[in-house]
Length: 352
Ligand code: SF4
Image (cartoon, rainbow, N blue to C red; front, side, top):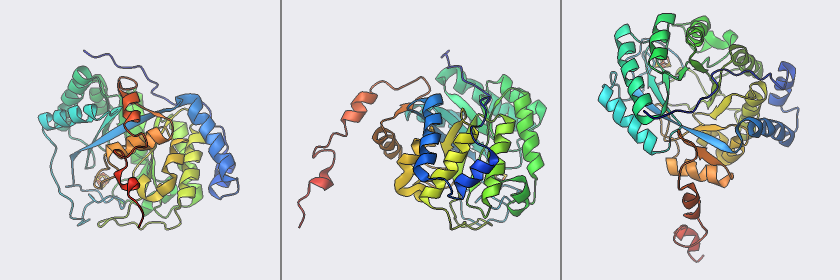
């Protein structure tokens, strides 16, 4: 059996800003570099220069009866995505091995649907137990609404974290979904927390919310002690029922990340979906605030290649944190990118 590192399951450090200060940051009333410095100080205090890489495995896609307006898999979405039912244990096992080989810190299994059946929970528990014991890879599961009994089965199998995003504030929730409520989301998080599973819960920015909604979410996650917070930026694709808030800019996205860091200083803040398009050339600045990333794409859309993500980390003077620490050979990886012709053939072409 492979030993796993012990990690915190609950965020316990107090926020370093008030709701009023968070709002001022989002409204652009605080100088950008001042905000970045304050958030970065907290990031380095708790996580040093490490970056955790998460790889998503969409183990069941589509066939969903829910109508979350931000999701291409929603009922009636007609998005053209490839739908498939729950992958077999062997298929998930092979995906987990690939994720481990790619340097994942955590393997995130995601299923569509309102919530798992008892049978699905048993199957997931067997898979989680095997990934834990044979690969030593931390596992996060995102499988929808959960009750206390199911949470206990998953915990006993070794589940490290359960993901269930709040997505937006309670007051804005009716705008994005009608088939379940914000309170349903809270109940699932409370069930997972009662079973002593670490909570992963975040949001999607850019779905028509106000700055005050983002502040509410940041402090609600603090109240729940959420230890892992994916901050996603809405990617508008066919099948969605909500429209992109076009005022998202790279600078604003960094302010959002900073607010979540300053409210939840010791939580893992992840730049989630949309980092490539919304943060653009400020992606590297985002890493001075956030300490984790998704690599190799998102649920239904592609993101950067893993090698591009590694380059981003290297350019920031940071190191990836793999499931068993810093990878052997990282120094050699850096040397591969020396400024010489074999590494940058296009830059060595003479201008015409
Ligand atoms: S977010 Fe989950 S529950 Fe909502 S529509 Fe998508 S797959 Fe279904």
